[in-house]
Length: 271
Image 1 (cartoon, rainbow, N blue to C red):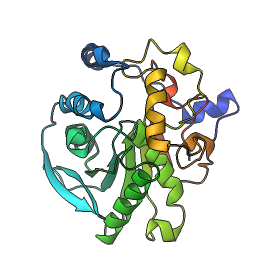
Image 2 (image 1 turned 45 degrees about the vertical axis):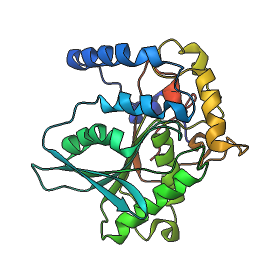
Image 3 (image 1 turned 180 degrees about the vertical axis):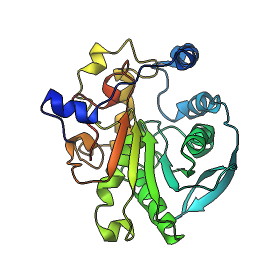
């Protein structure tokens, strides 16, 4: 993954937005709710509590939900009802490739639909350990090609945490026409992407207390469920080690209090 070499270059791609008082209150409430679970969500037993946490996201107004299957991958549509959709977003949920579901994420993704005016499809890609790497990535590719097969061409890719890492890996996989189905994504957005399954970032220690969700010990227990004995520096598993130059424009958002966006140091948005 490309990194800026100079401060001037960094200023061209990095912007820090001050948090509003309203959002600060929401963040404080969220932290108080999830922090008691910090470090405890491990293995498949954590799926139900993880989905319950995501299920507390308040549903936005003027968004309709519909279950569907795209390219053989089940999921949920989130469509704005007060406007004609301006495009389509393929959303890949977080959860360390072990946790999470499209149904639990539908209200979260619904806010993206409401804000962007796009229809959002949240893919229920296969989870580890039942389906280890690269099953989730292949499902994401199949879903993208399924959208193309329906005649949809104006597509962006988005995801958070593991879904953010999966989004970046998918962008690399879709570079060639034979992999993409003949149409490249228009753009991408990743939220605190998980891009380093080698867990090499020092901020796992230096920012450990700041992150309300995960601990390094917890991460160490989750990574083998997805990778097994596969190389954690494979760029399709850990985009930090790949070259994302020349891919579609991508916006990365990360919480400043978290451990490097859970991705390791020196990461920059591609494009």
